[in-house]
Image 1 (cartoon, rainbow, N blue to C red):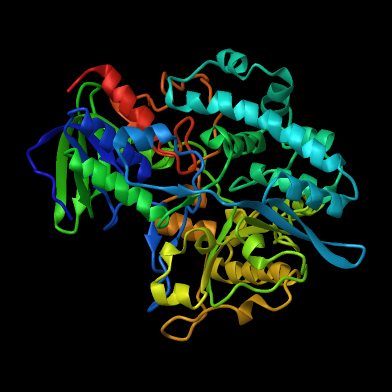
Image 2 (image 1 turned 90 degrees about the horizontal axis):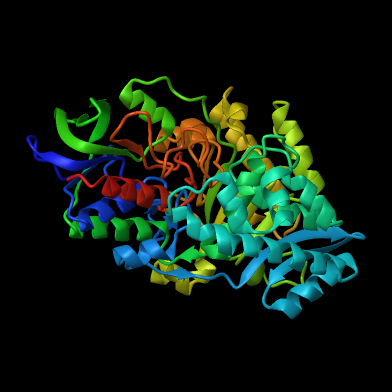
Length: 522
């Protein structure tokens, strides 16, 4: 823990040492500003950390956030980060049963192989050609929209002109994404694979009139200008460790174990009161950047909080002695689990699961997706585990809104976990339980987290991984020039709840730093 100098006035105080706060700190410190980062936990990183969750087991897992798409290479270059990503050779595998036999759809491994997989599943080339047309369209949007994320907010019409494709604009920005999915595809399983990107951490139906599913889909297909989701080498903590190193090297002071409890500002200067185990302190500053949720910002400034957020996912981390065999023997498990392994994510299944959860019931067939980090990046395993063939599995369950866990978080979490793993087992030639490793106490290496667990552990409001519903990447009333401004001059929101926030991107941190530097003070 580094203690701030009690009488020091800083050019910027950053509340929260998650990845966005560290990005802002590094940019500002490199520009010659004096920077203090206050982090309530005993470590930096927020939800983007690597930990060893299983006692006595040398496996360093990305415990919460786990894949990277939205991090601009610009930020990596600007800050000189020692950080690498690896591309997954397989995009996804979705098991299914057709005509009483196990089969599935493997996407990746080259164009010819993917085309053959579509034909084997659906009986023709039609769905593959539709897939190409649809993702050619989203690819064009990605190449045009992604670079705008680190620029001042465009207006809606400016972004529309940037997209330059009225069909794509209609499909992604104006009509529920379910319309486009149903227009392009006919196969239920293929439709479901497409729709999943609209539902990650977002509780919505394909035809939700709010279009929050469209916003989720958009962020999932524009990352890096390609939509590819890559594996962070060394786990997600490698990114936040590199960011913390960059910030410190540039002169930023990072004080862990310091919880900000109040922000007072007169529009020209501000004071941030922070608490430690030894008492309270006050840091004076020109700018405060809050790398926390909008709810936490309101609590710090004494404002009326925004509507409550709600998370909607089950996160499960596992360590296996070996990958399980599949009922579909045409696919090697090392390929099936290298990409995104979709479970109970047919289009009809997703709709049914949403309807059941919206009515207050656990989905009968909980949808989820799995991937194996260690297949792409074995460095997260100790040498002994790697030599013995151990593998990690990360499961992300959909349509699990926080409201379902309110009556008894532990009991509901276990019930949902059991049902989710049962859906996976239905596609395996052996039970997953037979493959799980055990920790030093002989317990299975498996941990599950509900939205309420994430709220408790990380301060995520309602367990929402985006802090609130994702925003459109263009200006709206009151969003300001960079999408980070608040009603308090000099107080900026640099967390996931900022406009163009959400995901592991660093974009809100970059944009808040740019807003400070544009102000020309300090």
